Length: 363
View 1 (cartoon, one colour):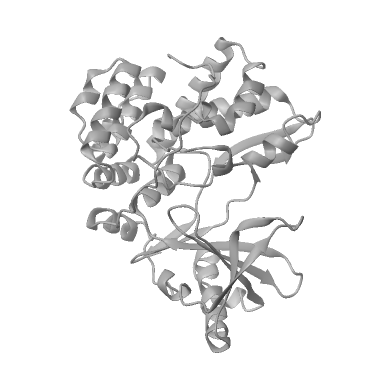
View 2 (cartoon, rainbow, N blue to C red):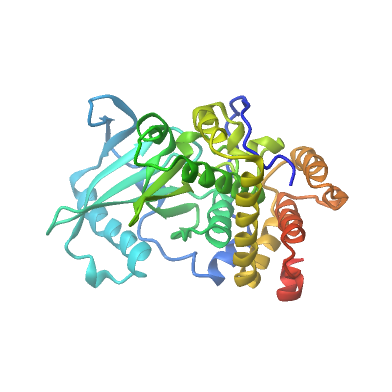
Protein backbone atom coordinates (compact mmCIF):
# COMPACT_ATOMS: atom_id res chain seq x y z
CA UNK A 1 0.00 0.00 0.00
CA UNK A 2 1.22 3.52 -0.81
CA UNK A 3 3.08 5.48 1.89
CA UNK A 4 3.52 2.42 4.09
CA UNK A 5 6.98 3.51 5.21
CA UNK A 6 7.02 6.10 7.97
CA UNK A 7 7.81 9.58 6.71
CA UNK A 8 8.65 12.86 8.41
CA UNK A 9 6.98 16.18 7.70
CA UNK A 10 5.29 18.98 9.60
CA UNK A 11 1.71 20.08 10.00
CA UNK A 12 0.68 23.50 11.25
CA UNK A 13 -1.22 23.96 14.48
CA UNK A 14 -4.98 23.82 14.14
CA UNK A 15 -7.67 26.14 15.33
CA UNK A 16 -9.83 24.97 18.17
CA UNK A 17 -12.50 22.58 16.94
CA UNK A 18 -16.12 23.44 17.80
CA UNK A 19 -18.02 21.19 20.18
CA UNK A 20 -20.83 19.12 18.67
CA UNK A 21 -23.80 18.05 20.81
CA UNK A 22 -24.78 14.40 21.00
CA UNK A 23 -27.65 13.95 18.56
CA UNK A 24 -30.61 11.59 18.71
CA UNK A 25 -28.95 8.90 16.60
CA UNK A 26 -25.81 8.70 18.70
CA UNK A 27 -27.84 9.00 21.91
CA UNK A 28 -29.93 6.01 20.87
CA UNK A 29 -26.77 4.03 20.17
CA UNK A 30 -25.34 4.92 23.59
CA UNK A 31 -28.54 3.79 25.31
CA UNK A 32 -28.59 0.52 23.37
CA UNK A 33 -25.09 -0.41 24.55
CA UNK A 34 -25.43 1.02 28.09
CA UNK A 35 -23.07 3.91 27.55
CA UNK A 36 -25.85 6.34 28.51
CA UNK A 37 -26.46 6.03 32.26
CA UNK A 38 -27.77 8.02 35.20
CA UNK A 39 -24.80 9.95 36.59
CA UNK A 40 -24.93 11.57 40.05
CA UNK A 41 -22.54 14.40 39.06
CA UNK A 42 -22.86 16.66 36.03
CA UNK A 43 -20.13 18.65 34.36
CA UNK A 44 -21.95 21.88 35.21
CA UNK A 45 -22.10 20.98 38.89
CA UNK A 46 -18.32 20.63 38.98
CA UNK A 47 -18.03 24.12 37.51
CA UNK A 48 -19.34 25.48 40.82
CA UNK A 49 -15.93 25.57 42.53
CA UNK A 50 -15.06 28.60 44.67
CA UNK A 51 -11.28 28.71 44.28
CA UNK A 52 -8.54 27.40 41.97
CA UNK A 53 -4.89 26.83 42.86
CA UNK A 54 -2.26 26.19 40.14
CA UNK A 55 -1.03 22.59 40.26
CA UNK A 56 2.71 21.95 39.92
CA UNK A 57 4.52 18.72 39.07
CA UNK A 58 7.05 16.81 41.17
CA UNK A 59 9.79 19.23 40.07
CA UNK A 60 7.77 22.27 41.08
CA UNK A 61 7.01 23.25 37.49
CA UNK A 62 3.52 24.51 36.57
CA UNK A 63 1.18 22.16 34.78
CA UNK A 64 -1.90 22.86 32.67
CA UNK A 65 -4.10 21.95 35.66
CA UNK A 66 -5.56 23.85 38.61
CA UNK A 67 -6.71 22.14 41.80
CA UNK A 68 -10.20 23.43 42.54
CA UNK A 69 -11.85 23.94 45.92
CA UNK A 70 -15.56 23.71 46.76
CA UNK A 71 -17.67 24.83 49.65
CA UNK A 72 -17.18 22.39 52.55
CA UNK A 73 -20.79 21.18 52.50
CA UNK A 74 -20.71 20.70 48.74
CA UNK A 75 -17.42 18.80 48.92
CA UNK A 76 -18.89 16.29 51.37
CA UNK A 77 -21.80 15.66 49.01
CA UNK A 78 -19.48 15.55 46.00
CA UNK A 79 -17.27 12.95 47.65
CA UNK A 80 -20.15 10.47 47.78
CA UNK A 81 -21.34 11.32 44.29
CA UNK A 82 -17.87 10.99 42.77
CA UNK A 83 -17.45 7.59 44.41
CA UNK A 84 -20.67 6.53 42.66
CA UNK A 85 -19.29 7.77 39.34
CA UNK A 86 -16.14 5.74 39.90
CA UNK A 87 -18.25 2.69 40.74
CA UNK A 88 -20.20 3.11 37.49
CA UNK A 89 -16.98 3.13 35.47
CA UNK A 90 -15.19 0.34 37.32
CA UNK A 91 -17.78 -2.08 38.76
CA UNK A 92 -21.00 -1.30 36.87
CA UNK A 93 -22.34 0.82 39.73
CA UNK A 94 -21.84 -1.61 42.64
CA UNK A 95 -21.43 0.87 45.51
CA UNK A 96 -20.82 -1.84 48.10
CA UNK A 97 -17.19 -2.26 47.02
CA UNK A 98 -16.21 1.44 46.97
CA UNK A 99 -17.11 2.54 50.49
CA UNK A 100 -13.44 2.70 51.50
CA UNK A 101 -12.60 5.08 48.63
CA UNK A 102 -12.66 8.86 48.72
CA UNK A 103 -12.21 11.75 46.29
CA UNK A 104 -8.86 13.17 47.32
CA UNK A 105 -8.58 16.00 44.79
CA UNK A 106 -10.40 17.60 41.86
CA UNK A 107 -8.31 19.25 39.14
CA UNK A 108 -9.54 21.41 36.27
CA UNK A 109 -7.88 22.06 32.91
CA UNK A 110 -8.83 24.87 30.54
CA UNK A 111 -6.54 23.53 27.79
CA UNK A 112 -8.18 21.60 24.98
CA UNK A 113 -11.75 21.30 23.78
CA UNK A 114 -13.25 19.25 26.59
CA UNK A 115 -11.97 21.41 29.52
CA UNK A 116 -11.88 18.31 31.73
CA UNK A 117 -12.10 17.75 35.44
CA UNK A 118 -9.74 15.07 36.76
CA UNK A 119 -10.79 13.39 39.98
CA UNK A 120 -8.21 11.53 42.03
CA UNK A 121 -9.77 8.56 43.83
CA UNK A 122 -7.80 7.10 46.74
CA UNK A 123 -8.12 3.80 48.60
CA UNK A 124 -8.19 4.61 52.33
CA UNK A 125 -6.66 1.24 53.25
CA UNK A 126 -3.56 1.30 51.05
CA UNK A 127 -3.38 4.81 49.53
CA UNK A 128 -3.59 3.39 45.99
CA UNK A 129 -4.66 6.11 43.54
CA UNK A 130 -6.74 6.09 40.39
CA UNK A 131 -8.32 8.78 38.26
CA UNK A 132 -11.59 9.44 36.48
CA UNK A 133 -12.33 12.32 34.12
CA UNK A 134 -15.55 14.31 33.75
CA UNK A 135 -15.85 16.39 30.59
CA UNK A 136 -18.23 18.20 28.31
CA UNK A 137 -19.91 15.63 26.11
CA UNK A 138 -18.74 16.25 22.54
CA UNK A 139 -20.15 13.98 19.82
CA UNK A 140 -16.80 13.91 17.98
CA UNK A 141 -15.02 12.64 21.07
CA UNK A 142 -17.68 10.02 21.77
CA UNK A 143 -17.40 8.67 18.22
CA UNK A 144 -13.63 8.53 18.65
CA UNK A 145 -13.86 6.67 21.94
CA UNK A 146 -16.30 4.12 20.55
CA UNK A 147 -14.35 3.55 17.31
CA UNK A 148 -11.22 3.01 19.39
CA UNK A 149 -13.13 0.55 21.58
CA UNK A 150 -14.35 -1.45 18.59
CA UNK A 151 -11.43 -1.31 16.14
CA UNK A 152 -8.27 -1.06 18.27
CA UNK A 153 -6.79 -3.65 20.66
CA UNK A 154 -7.83 -1.40 23.57
CA UNK A 155 -11.08 -1.48 25.51
CA UNK A 156 -12.41 1.85 26.77
CA UNK A 157 -14.85 2.51 29.60
CA UNK A 158 -16.91 5.68 29.39
CA UNK A 159 -20.47 6.78 30.09
CA UNK A 160 -22.58 9.78 29.16
CA UNK A 161 -25.58 11.63 30.49
CA UNK A 162 -26.88 14.74 28.76
CA UNK A 163 -23.93 17.04 28.18
CA UNK A 164 -21.65 15.16 30.59
CA UNK A 165 -19.04 12.57 29.61
CA UNK A 166 -17.17 10.38 32.12
CA UNK A 167 -14.00 8.53 31.11
CA UNK A 168 -11.63 6.20 32.90
CA UNK A 169 -7.94 7.02 33.08
CA UNK A 170 -5.72 5.72 30.27
CA UNK A 171 -2.45 4.75 31.95
CA UNK A 172 0.88 5.02 30.20
CA UNK A 173 3.93 7.19 29.55
CA UNK A 174 2.94 10.33 27.59
CA UNK A 175 4.54 10.27 24.16
CA UNK A 176 6.51 13.49 24.64
CA UNK A 177 8.01 12.16 27.89
CA UNK A 178 8.74 8.79 26.26
CA UNK A 179 10.64 10.55 23.46
CA UNK A 180 12.84 12.55 25.82
CA UNK A 181 13.39 10.01 28.62
CA UNK A 182 12.80 6.51 27.24
CA UNK A 183 13.47 6.38 23.52
CA UNK A 184 17.23 5.80 23.79
CA UNK A 185 17.10 3.32 26.67
CA UNK A 186 19.15 0.23 25.80
CA UNK A 187 16.67 -2.19 27.35
CA UNK A 188 14.00 -1.23 24.78
CA UNK A 189 14.01 -2.86 21.35
CA UNK A 190 14.13 -0.11 18.68
CA UNK A 191 12.37 -2.37 16.19
CA UNK A 192 9.44 -2.88 18.56
CA UNK A 193 9.09 0.87 18.99
CA UNK A 194 9.04 1.28 15.20
CA UNK A 195 6.57 -1.57 14.74
CA UNK A 196 4.12 -0.02 17.18
CA UNK A 197 4.36 3.38 15.53
CA UNK A 198 3.52 1.87 12.14
CA UNK A 199 0.50 0.09 13.62
CA UNK A 200 -0.66 3.12 15.57
CA UNK A 201 -0.29 5.29 12.48
CA UNK A 202 -2.46 2.91 10.48
CA UNK A 203 -5.22 2.70 13.10
CA UNK A 204 -5.48 6.47 13.36
CA UNK A 205 -5.65 6.82 9.58
CA UNK A 206 -8.38 4.22 9.09
CA UNK A 207 -10.44 5.47 12.06
CA UNK A 208 -9.86 9.13 11.05
CA UNK A 209 -8.55 9.98 14.51
CA UNK A 210 -6.66 13.23 14.12
CA UNK A 211 -4.12 15.37 15.95
CA UNK A 212 -2.08 12.53 17.42
CA UNK A 213 0.84 14.68 18.51
CA UNK A 214 3.18 13.18 21.08
CA UNK A 215 1.28 14.61 24.05
CA UNK A 216 -1.98 13.07 22.85
CA UNK A 217 -0.93 9.42 23.08
CA UNK A 218 0.84 7.20 25.61
CA UNK A 219 3.28 4.31 25.52
CA UNK A 220 2.42 1.26 27.60
CA UNK A 221 5.62 -0.59 28.51
CA UNK A 222 5.25 -4.19 29.74
CA UNK A 223 8.21 -6.35 30.86
CA UNK A 224 8.28 -9.68 29.06
CA UNK A 225 10.38 -12.79 29.77
CA UNK A 226 13.00 -11.78 27.17
CA UNK A 227 12.36 -8.14 26.46
CA UNK A 228 9.87 -5.29 26.89
CA UNK A 229 6.60 -5.21 24.97
CA UNK A 230 5.36 -1.81 23.78
CA UNK A 231 1.93 -0.52 22.87
CA UNK A 232 0.84 2.96 21.81
CA UNK A 233 -2.61 4.15 22.92
CA UNK A 234 -4.46 7.28 21.96
CA UNK A 235 -5.69 9.26 24.94
CA UNK A 236 -7.24 12.33 23.28
CA UNK A 237 -10.19 11.94 20.93
CA UNK A 238 -11.26 15.57 20.50
CA UNK A 239 -10.17 15.67 16.85
CA UNK A 240 -12.09 12.64 15.62
CA UNK A 241 -13.21 13.03 11.99
CA UNK A 242 -13.28 16.82 11.73
CA UNK A 243 -10.29 18.06 9.73
CA UNK A 244 -10.20 17.98 5.94
CA UNK A 245 -6.45 17.31 5.59
CA UNK A 246 -5.49 13.70 4.98
CA UNK A 247 -2.18 13.89 6.82
CA UNK A 248 -3.87 15.27 9.93
CA UNK A 249 -4.89 11.66 10.58
CA UNK A 250 -1.32 10.30 10.27
CA UNK A 251 0.83 10.75 13.39
CA UNK A 252 4.00 10.41 11.30
CA UNK A 253 3.51 13.92 9.90
CA UNK A 254 3.46 16.00 13.10
CA UNK A 255 6.61 17.90 14.01
CA UNK A 256 6.04 16.99 17.67
CA UNK A 257 6.62 13.36 16.64
CA UNK A 258 9.66 14.08 14.45
CA UNK A 259 12.26 12.62 16.83
CA UNK A 260 10.22 9.44 17.20
CA UNK A 261 9.66 9.14 13.44
CA UNK A 262 13.35 9.71 12.66
CA UNK A 263 14.31 7.07 15.23
CA UNK A 264 11.88 4.56 13.73
CA UNK A 265 12.78 5.13 10.07
CA UNK A 266 16.30 3.93 10.89
CA UNK A 267 14.94 0.60 12.15
CA UNK A 268 12.66 -0.62 9.35
CA UNK A 269 12.92 -1.46 5.68
CA UNK A 270 9.95 -0.45 3.55
CA UNK A 271 8.99 -4.13 3.15
CA UNK A 272 8.91 -4.60 6.92
CA UNK A 273 6.82 -1.47 7.40
CA UNK A 274 4.39 -2.81 4.79
CA UNK A 275 4.22 -6.10 6.69
CA UNK A 276 3.36 -4.38 9.98
CA UNK A 277 0.80 -2.14 8.29
CA UNK A 278 -0.90 -5.17 6.73
CA UNK A 279 -0.88 -7.00 10.08
CA UNK A 280 -2.74 -4.11 11.69
CA UNK A 281 -5.21 -3.88 8.81
CA UNK A 282 -5.96 -7.58 9.17
CA UNK A 283 -6.49 -7.25 12.92
CA UNK A 284 -8.78 -4.26 12.42
CA UNK A 285 -10.93 -6.20 10.00
CA UNK A 286 -11.14 -9.14 12.39
CA UNK A 287 -12.28 -6.80 15.16
CA UNK A 288 -14.78 -5.20 12.77
CA UNK A 289 -16.20 -8.62 11.91
CA UNK A 290 -16.59 -9.54 15.57
CA UNK A 291 -18.43 -6.28 16.29
CA UNK A 292 -20.14 -5.98 12.91
CA UNK A 293 -23.66 -5.18 14.15
CA UNK A 294 -22.50 -2.71 16.77
CA UNK A 295 -20.05 -1.05 14.39
CA UNK A 296 -22.75 -0.82 11.73
CA UNK A 297 -25.13 0.96 14.09
CA UNK A 298 -22.38 3.35 15.18
CA UNK A 299 -21.46 4.25 11.60
CA UNK A 300 -25.13 4.68 10.71
CA UNK A 301 -25.44 7.28 13.47
CA UNK A 302 -22.15 8.88 12.46
CA UNK A 303 -23.15 9.15 8.80
CA UNK A 304 -26.20 11.19 9.75
CA UNK A 305 -24.32 13.45 12.15
CA UNK A 306 -22.90 16.78 10.85
CA UNK A 307 -19.66 16.62 12.89
CA UNK A 308 -17.64 18.32 10.15
CA UNK A 309 -18.50 21.00 7.56
CA UNK A 310 -19.26 19.75 4.02
CA UNK A 311 -16.19 21.48 2.61
CA UNK A 312 -13.91 19.52 4.94
CA UNK A 313 -15.67 16.25 4.08
CA UNK A 314 -15.25 16.98 0.36
CA UNK A 315 -11.58 17.94 0.79
CA UNK A 316 -10.83 14.74 2.67
CA UNK A 317 -12.81 12.48 0.35
CA UNK A 318 -10.79 13.68 -2.65
CA UNK A 319 -7.52 12.93 -0.86
CA UNK A 320 -8.70 9.50 0.24
CA UNK A 321 -10.01 8.64 -3.23
CA UNK A 322 -6.57 9.40 -4.62
CA UNK A 323 -4.73 7.65 -1.78
CA UNK A 324 -6.66 4.39 -2.10
CA UNK A 325 -7.36 4.64 -5.84
CA UNK A 326 -11.10 4.23 -5.24
CA UNK A 327 -13.56 6.73 -6.79
CA UNK A 328 -16.29 5.46 -4.43
CA UNK A 329 -15.04 7.97 -1.87
CA UNK A 330 -16.41 10.80 -3.99
CA UNK A 331 -19.94 9.64 -3.19
CA UNK A 332 -19.42 10.15 0.55
CA UNK A 333 -21.16 13.12 2.16
CA UNK A 334 -20.18 12.62 5.79
CA UNK A 335 -17.22 11.67 7.92
CA UNK A 336 -19.01 8.51 8.98
CA UNK A 337 -19.29 7.47 5.35
CA UNK A 338 -15.55 8.07 4.91
CA UNK A 339 -14.70 5.84 7.89
CA UNK A 340 -16.96 3.16 6.42
CA UNK A 341 -15.19 3.51 3.05
CA UNK A 342 -11.79 3.27 4.75
CA UNK A 343 -12.85 -0.05 6.24
CA UNK A 344 -13.96 -1.22 2.81
CA UNK A 345 -10.58 -0.19 1.38
CA UNK A 346 -8.57 -2.21 3.86
CA UNK A 347 -11.03 -5.10 3.57
CA UNK A 348 -10.10 -5.30 -0.09
CA UNK A 349 -6.39 -5.14 0.78
CA UNK A 350 -6.50 -8.04 3.21
CA UNK A 351 -9.08 -10.15 1.38
CA UNK A 352 -11.63 -10.41 4.18
CA UNK A 353 -15.32 -11.17 3.48
CA UNK A 354 -17.54 -8.15 2.92
CA UNK A 355 -18.81 -6.78 6.20
CA UNK A 356 -22.19 -6.19 4.59
CA UNK A 357 -22.59 -9.97 4.48
CA UNK A 358 -22.08 -10.10 8.23
CA UNK A 359 -24.16 -7.06 9.19
CA UNK A 360 -26.40 -5.28 6.70
CA UNK A 361 -26.38 -2.25 9.04
CA UNK A 362 -22.80 -1.53 7.98
CA UNK A 363 -23.85 -0.33 4.53
